[in-house]
Length: 302
Image (cartoon, rainbow, N blue to C red; front, side, top):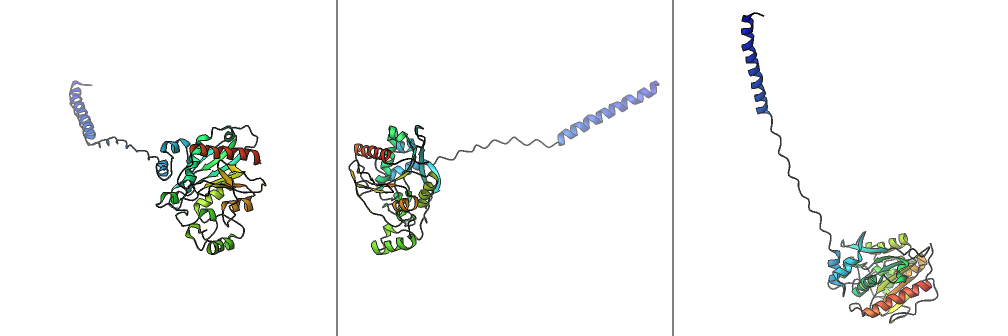
């Protein structure tokens, strides 16, 4: 290559290099800037519903700590006004091949707050050996809407007496007739338009169908006695101070349903006062006597 040719190539190469550098800077200058990194959004967890805080405002001698310590869980069923029916399951100690299954419910009538409160106190005594051998499902407050209003009501938010809303023979004929003729259309004992028309009574019914309890215990007030419906000849004589007395069978009552539809015994405990709790000792005696009677008189079947 001649010297003249080399002199011509060197400036051309320099011009090309300068063009490449300029083009590179131009491209870099026109490149869109990367979007700024998004600041992560902190999502606050939903506050846990304060079910116990609301319940204990309407029951005697039940603290929030006592309620929370029991560990009640929502069953998936809501009352008419949307409060969950809360329950707790207790497994047996496994010493029996087929443990007794007991459904214990309180507060089916909202104006009987002691019937719900006593269940919370009884659950503090699940440590008794007889209780350990039993498989429990416990719902202390079946009618929260009736419990929460002022004044408290026997019926639920639809004005239905849940303890007249269960299946019984000839319910469509007998339940309205009994309400109209025997109670004189007492609104506190209105049975509803159809059996199981209410979410609360349906929960009890469906729980009986799925849990298949050997006995149901329903706590009420204020008659101060014990009633028993079932296919057994030997009713309990007394639980604590509460003496046995045959209250009667009413169309649509839980006792009527248990006997005539399930051949399942139903124990109805009527505390002496709907608003004033029994003494702690009396409450323990009722619980202890009930457990002893059940263990001696109710046999478990698979």
